Image 1 (cartoon, rainbow, N blue to C red):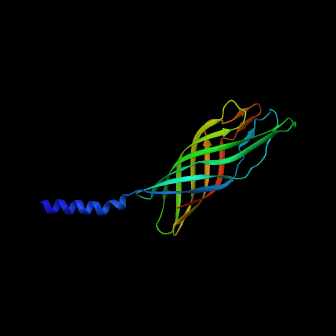
Image 2 (image 1 turned 90 degrees about the vertical axis):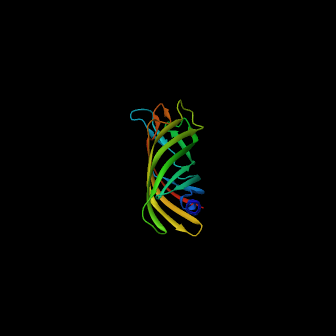
Image 3 (image 1 turned 120 degrees about the vertical axis):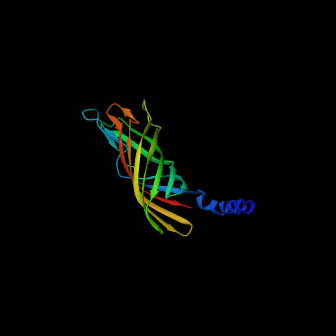
Length: 184
């Protein structure tokens, strides 16, 4: 009986690394495929000044059964100007998506789908509201090469509220972005 207990404990100790979680850190960057702001129909006329990049750190905890949890802190610069020439305003847009990711298949190239929540913060823009929460969905491919994972993907974010709402201008609730992540 004692010998069987020792064997069982030894087997459990050897199997534990198979269930261990691994943590990956890296960077993610890309280009927004939609504007940060949109003009309210019939109001003052605004235009976006495009800044076509977004970047930031990423963290992933790998779980069993081809699952993982990812968290990003993505920054992009935003800018708009009034068409009447009365001014231009700049700021930053921070997106903090927390997503559950499922990878299909086996091997060095694996497609994935992801979904979760996102918190958005607009900084340095004069507005009554500057935060919003939303839903984020994504799909892409993970390519594993020695010591590095490269993950190009497309993400869609649907915000439940306007992060910015000024006279004639509001934040775009539907945003698409193409990203590529490099994790170690």
